[in-house]
Amino acid sequence: MRHFRTILPGHFEIERGDVSDYAQLARFHYARTRPAIFAQIWRCVYVAPFTRAGSLAGVLVLTYPTRNAMGRRSVLPIRGSPGDELKFVNEHVRTISRVIVHPQFRSLGISTRLIRCVCESCNTRYVEAVARMGRIHPLFDRAGMTRVEPTDEKRPVYFVFDRKKGGNTSPVCNIPNR
Image 1 (cartoon, one colour):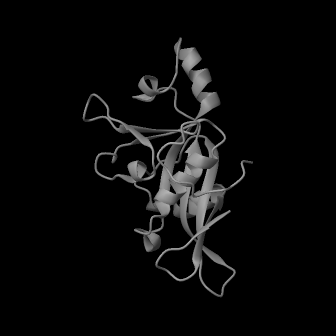
Image 2 (cartoon, one colour):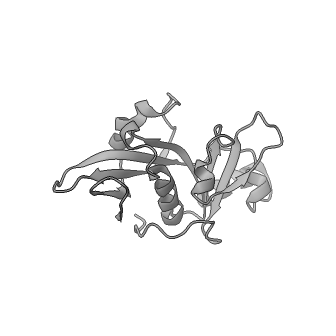
């Protein structure tokens, strides 16, 4: 578990979560569909001073990667057939599919901290994200992921974090893998 403080009294804790955490905040995400296959769920809980109960402030959903992602082959060491690519990504890549922060806790850096923590703690070498809002909102840039611009401006931006290279983040999380 990782603790951090903001301008609010009390502190925040980032820890592993479950599908019920995602369900609590899903209504605040612009995509109405549910991610296909959950790999891991992480949550951020606000613990007010003098209380033991926490309030769910944010959630991040990691999924297994899709078969194809624009930009992936240009960045990752993928060789061979589409079948080889599928085998590689299933073994070495997880995808950030949702980052949701409750409106009450927005603008406190929770999403950036969740992404950094997951990038550092994921049990695969690479963590990726494909963001339609990537040109407008620098969320993944701030979290230390590498941006890969598509050749077509209408396509989403691809982001990747290589755990062996350490990315551009400073350590924020010491959560053991499960």
